Image (cartoon, rainbow, N blue to C red; front, side, top):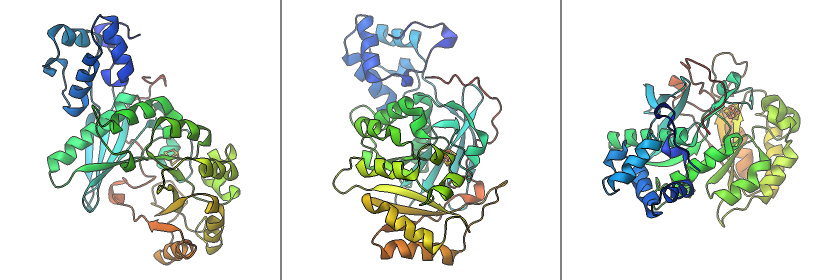
Length: 362
Ligand code: SF4
């Protein structure tokens, strides 16, 4: 049950599900359709105050205003890359910051959003991993990134934002309830943000124990950050592999229920001398045989404090051609936004001003 709060402690209404809002209205003697009206105003019409919800009776608006706020993460900084990629630094209520990246494609924008402040996974090629986990983002903070960046795409006027990837700061499956709650809003086609599930991709470092829950709770696409086909190399790059080794991860992928033409995307960051040899490409083709897979090859984006280097283009293309010869779809993702540190693995939430107590806003 949603309890009345002191004025300065009111929660963001976007942290509550439709069922919770229905129960809230019912507990105050109001009918359930009030919840759907409020959700329409929040997500389809993007109002920023309860006063603007004009088809809600005055007493319903007052009730909402007494219990909730509507907030958005504030834009602290925007950096634009030469290729049109835009990196947004969002300031959160507790002084922490997260980054989202708006990426122009041929005929649409793709938005990469964050799900945690920092990350506990500690991948050795990733700037965010160096921070450690500070806290989970709330459902409202995840949704807020989408709404703010969608407004930015609309203001630009050239093309719409149609694709979302949960591939920014954080491991989405380690913040499961907030992420799934946000995905329900993002993909709801009645009162939500109306993104197609086919255009929303959740990328995980491989928390396979959550795959069954994810398949039950959402239809968004799954991507797995793989980066190596043997346990020694993968554990060196991704400490999570010590807990969930490759065999277990691939077995969970093979059992993941997919729609008829869907595939799991495997991301493979190519790092010079570490995972970019012909032998490792052949190992990868054998490893993925049991899975309906496509592979995104991402040349490593160098950043400060890393010993890793990007392979040269010939090595990248040779790796790709071995995968293609073995009948895999393998696409090289020449990263965008690398001149503003907005490319894969470069997000760090720079300018973080305070560190919270880790209690989050769940
Ligand atoms: S690559 Fe992803 S999972 Fe790994 S440390 Fe970075 S943000 Fe976390």
